Length: 357
Length: 279
Image 1 (tube, each protein chain N blue to C red):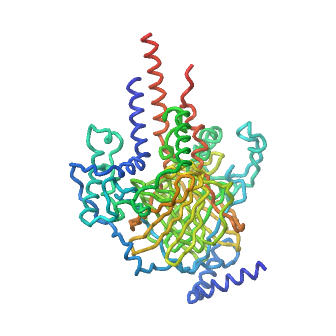
Image 2 (spheres, helix red, strand yellow; image 1 turned 90 degrees about the horizontal axis):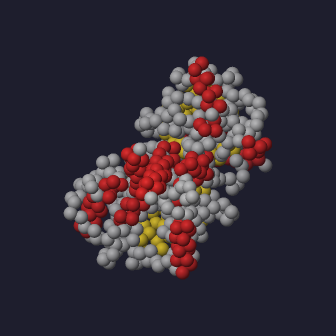
């Protein structure tokens, strides 16, 4: 009996880690200067070039109805952290520095396979081919995805934002332990939504793949993670009333020359982006800069969280399709196993307590 | 007014498709012979194909039972009349599904245990063809290489490969769809299913040998004739067919909204594992 409940927990932990990996690896990126002795795997046969400069001369092919053609399979997988690491002051790495940063980050991911470490219990990225160095990633010489403010950091959270963070923390504490019930578990583990769907579309850690399909009046973006789809109307229609709030908000798009501009509001606030409120507004700008790359910039505005907007650039690199169905919830054994394991542990602890009295 | 607008669309489509017009006329004639729909010629997309773009929905009770059925009480007592089953004439051609004897028995068991077993209740991906008539709208995003069907229920999505067609790499809920144009008709061939989805709330089911061939034929500016041929030798004694119209949403602000139903079923699925307050 004891053995069984423990193995439930273990199986659950692995499954949970699978769902959490996105969060974990993104958090991992923000670690600064953690140079590793572990040798990096030979990275990347197919990294796409950073091509912000190329955008000035490149003109995208056109769809049959005349839109700049963004269609195909893309990835925003990257080793560049959202925020500039502490101790780094420059905005753009030299090619040698960029290569070294990639190798260091790849080595950190490889560390997750070292037997006996906590990270190894979480998930074996390398074994399952999910570490970024084994697939296409968007080559980017920037030291941070954030391009504004110039220091590459998220602006300080203002008083209203801090108050909300405290309230959220208090609510979480009042709700009990993470494994007390399903509602307390992370939304990614619950297969509700995962990193990557956005907006803004952030590197999901693995499966950071997208498919863009265009039809007259619409752009559709399929996110591989949990088959999340955004259908963006381009017909200038008004935003929906504020009564309609969604996990991914509601998006409206338009073409400004070569650039697809997408504005999204009507978030439900349950999937806060970097602590944002439900009044978050995200403005994304997609510009095809080469056959194999799209410049993707997003600006985040939320006066109830930050006193100023901030902007990041996370290029999309062309990758091979197709995208296979990511049916997450349908076989989410992890949730039931983790909760069952937690209940079994509680029962055992209660029996031991009774026995020792 | 309506007709005038339609004529304009037709003229624009004709101008855009220009050179291919003569060819289209021939294929349209072929389609009229092949299809049960009347000889309607749909407006064209800019790349010259019948334009299926739009938000579509069925108007029938097939999701309750694809076979003919009388009205009945709600399977959940507390929902009363709001959850009761409306009668339906069925969408199966010939009336009855040609089950193998053991399979019919399994369908009846499924029906008896439907509250526990119906994947829809658990917010699982609906499978094909159930996604079409499950009751919520879906949007067709039609491009040259890929045609996307995006369903409101559970955000289920299908990619129909019009080019670069391959076999299903593995089994899945929504299957692996390759498409082609036959005159006015989009023909979608889907295989690679798992054996976990149902056809309806009445326990009608299939195995992983399911093979579905769907035909989408525009029959007016705002309706499509939808037909699906179902083949599954492990469950049915012969292939059989269903058909129904799809209706287009004409509201100017129509859009597929979020129905992220996982959240709505968590207590149902995991509530028994909730930590109980200390005594």
